[in-house]
Image: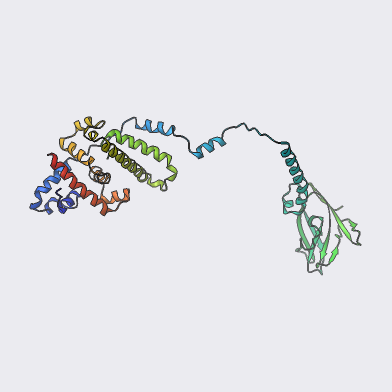
Length: 210
Length: 141
């Protein structure tokens, strides 16, 4: 197979003009011209029905896994459950457990603050010589360190605002971590150990100390 | 590329359907045309391999006009018909670069960007295509 001269190939590539080839390549140049003259530049037109055929083929494509899943989610289905008696008993036991545990968790957990029946209660104590004041009660497990009061604007006044669930609460202030003091503005009850606790009634409408 | 308008339409149709199926894999939606070109190119190469296998199985098929070829040939000059048949004898890679450059009028840089091949390798394919076409035309004129 006779090959085109490299310069003729470069002419075919459009990198050289015919003048740059030289007379000795004239015959090859003529062959190259003949070759390019056979290139059909007429535009290619696709059949008019191509669009319809493509769309028909696309519509008939089987749905992908996700498309099938999405279709299943959006379609109503009839569900039939066959439940065994022991499963019913287990479910009932589980439900009972949830019911029994739920109130205890509400009292101790922080969810109390978000409970819809919770009420914000402001605890205030006038203790001018105190360095640290907290409030302990049934709402925080009588933890003397769980709920500290902060110094208020007025001198000697300590205050803290808590969200408490509806119900009756017993409480007392703890001054400097050692001294338990009943709220002088609230009714109190004897705790059975020689101290008095204060009583607070919280309802959805507010808190009462009397 | 495929030497037949019918085969070309089938390839375009298949490419569109394949693009639809794999649309989620199009990483650069701004270059959808380039992505679609590669799908169509692969489809053409696959078709080329398939017809080549069939031609090997039945050599006489190669001499028969393909579907639609007779009508098309009637509108072409003798040189165009001869060259078209010569182009169909090239390898798929040689045919691709010849068609893109001399029929579509694209530069080597544009072809390289579309196909992922280097300009040097494209030129090598093209220059071999020139030689093969030259020999093909010489034998038949």
